[in-house]
Each structure stands twice: as C-alpha cells, then as structure tokens.
Image 1: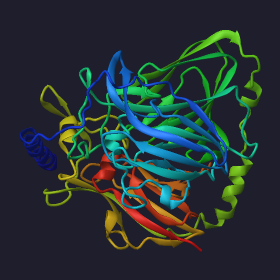
Image 2: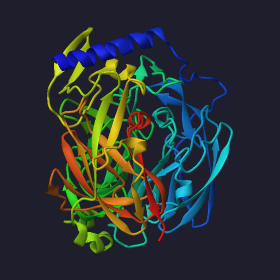
Image 3: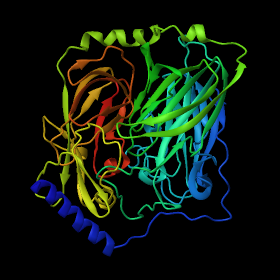
Image 4: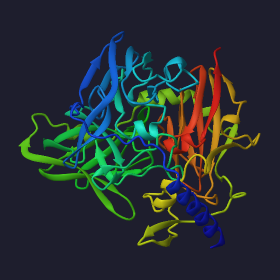
Length: 518
C-alpha cells in the first residue's frame, strides 16, 4: 500500500500542476469551410504507377454530430491501395494538416529512405510541404500507412489507411468478396472530442484509451451479405493503445493470415486478438440468414462494433465447400524452411521493458490498477496480463513525457532507448531477440513492439514454441511474458524498434539498429 500511495501522490502532484499550467491544445473546431468526409475508395495500382495522397482536415459524423478530424484524400480511413506483390509505386504526398508530419508504410520492407521516420530517414514535412515516397511491396498480405510524427494526435484523428498486396502465388482459398476493417477508438468529452496538447504528449502512462468505438472510422458501420457467402476480412487495429479481441458470434470464422501474409496452416477460431498495429486475415462463412455483430469481447464487458445483416437470398456461387477445408499454405512454409535450423539456437540479443517514474527515486511496484469513481480510488487486482480499459484516467491523462520514461533496456550493455548504439547487423543475418515484459515494474501492462524494415517469426511465448508460424512486424507482449523472435535482417538501412503505443514511443520507448549492405 505504501508503494501505491507513492504513485498516487506523484500523479496527484502532476495533476495539480497540470491544472495550474494550461497549454494550448490541438483540439479542432467545426468550420463551414471544411469538407465532409467521403467514403473510402479502393484504388488499384500497377507496377510503376504514381498516386497523389494528401492529408487534410474533414468534418466527420460521429454519433450524429460533426467533428473536425484529419483524413487522407478526404476519407477516414484513407484510400485502400491495392497493389500486386513485387510492384513499386510512387506516392506524391502533401501535408495540408496543421502540424508537421511524415508518411510511414507500416510493415512494408521498402527502401530505408522512404520509411517516414522523422530526423532518421527524412526531415519532417512542414505544413503545406510535399515529399515523394517510392514504395516497393515484396510481401503479400495486409499493411497500412500512418504518420510517424505526433501520431498520438494525427493518427488518432483519422490519418490511417490500408495497403492490400495481392499475392503472386495461388495459395489463397476462393471467397465471394474481400472487405477491410480498421478497428479503432477515440476519446470524447461529452459531445466533443477530447483535447490534445500542442506543447506536450499526455496519457504517457497507459496510452490514450478511447470511449467511442470505431470501425472504418464510423460508429455505426454495417455490412450486408447473402446466405452462403464467404467473406475475407483484412482487419487492422489502428487504436493508440486498446487491444481488440474480436469475434462474430453465430458465424464460422477461420484465421488464415496476420501482419505479413499467410500462416503455415489455416485454423478455426472463435476470436482474434490484436494489439495496436497488428493485423489479421480471417475468412467468415455466413451460412444462415439473420443479424450478426462484430464484437469486442473482454473479460469485463462486450462492445458491439459493427452490424452484419445476412439475407435469405442465396449467393450465386457459394464457396462453403472450399471454406470447410483448412488449407496448408506451401508458399509460407517454403519461405520459412531455410531458417528452421536456427530455431533452437541461443538468443543473440536481450531486451527488457521498464518504466522509469522520473522523480520517484527508483522503481515502485504496483500490481493491478486504480479506478476513479465518485472521487474515490478503488483497487483492482485482477492480475490480467492485458490492460483492457483505462482504469486510472486521472493519473493517465496527466502523465506526460516529463513525468515518466518507458524504456527498452539492452541487457548486455544496460543502455536504454536511443542510447543503444551498437545493434549493427549485415544484410542476410538472422538475429534471435528475446524481449521480456516483467510484471513487477512500476506499471505492468502489455506492449505491442514493432520492428521497422524487416520481418520476423515469433518462435516462442513464455517458453512455449509456436506451432503455426507467420511472418510478422509487430508482436503483442502481455505483462509477465517473454517472447523470442527470429528476425530476418534482409533490408539495409537505419531502422527503429519501438512500442506502437504512440504515447510510449513519444516518452522514449524506441531504439535504433542498423543493417549494412552486403
């Protein structure tokens, strides 16, 4: 209880200071000159094509009220860019937002100069400025694009969109159609969007949880289908910090792919767990007519996210027979086979996640959370390795980059974050990285760790070997867990490893590594 009191006292002081020192905020107000958000378009591009992409303000309807938000080419999500594997496209990007920005093609193994990391691969794009990105697509699957500067604000306000990369191999089952689902949340204060500080990044303790759920930028997303229809869903978690556990009760669902392509084998599943920036490819059979829902299911409550209506009308050609077969994906197996001899080798690098509460004089363990209700603090000691909700809203909202630092610690050198300066590899290296997320730190919680420019395999979680592998670029590490990754260092350049909770990234939780050309 003494440790809890220290943490509470620390954040109480922070809260009182924040109340006395107000700063300008980035909250945007409605104006009649701002266009209404349009529908998301699917844009099919060929190898060598050029596409113009603009980030600007729009008015977006949320729960029947208009709010000024940000969009790519006028829509939230931005255009879905559908490209064939092996293609290279040029994106002429224009920044017409109110802040500096960049464009990061998440999970895409593109040339380093176009990775969109400010002050590492490029200078920030000024308001009114432009930048030309050349994006090559070596891998098939579902990827996405978003800012890599003040994404705690800009991404949260609507700057995100999908890439769908069509595979060269005939390794996919037939479906009636494909749909993209970008799941998100946003924080409201009454009928208005909660404010964002211009001068500082807040919510650095846990990340900004939203209280309003979004699917494809909408609070009332719906989809109509016919009886017997098989739909392939490409799902992306674009939330700042919320973990989504998705299911469609009453419909049969098959997990076929993740971040960077297909699993070795299809699996039947009732739910799909996605940390921020993770993706899943699922196929769903709507065998009977009726009303179905995409839901977010946590141990504490279930949120309806989207409505699916299935009519009595039979689909003209049903792929139910193909759907009933769990497919083996030979192209994925073949891509992994050259590396299987390295699975049981010793780890090369060791990282540990930590939280440094500045000014508290060390680490003070806090197990469970606190919830503010009627000005009283209630202890929650459920021990869940995933923090599903913001149970400490006052502490979280007043935390900032001055009050705490999230850390990646290199166990060999004891260096942290951007001070880690000796992770240098050569193109073609296989590097086994072990990442530990202890549950006895100041604030244990899950972290989605993203590696730029490369792809990796999750070999094990807490010592249990993975029995169905898929190429990934982000791994969700629950508190108390330890993961072992095999990273294929195939792409030369200067890259980043970081937590994909943007408030944690902004508060220090990122580190560099370098891959030299052969």
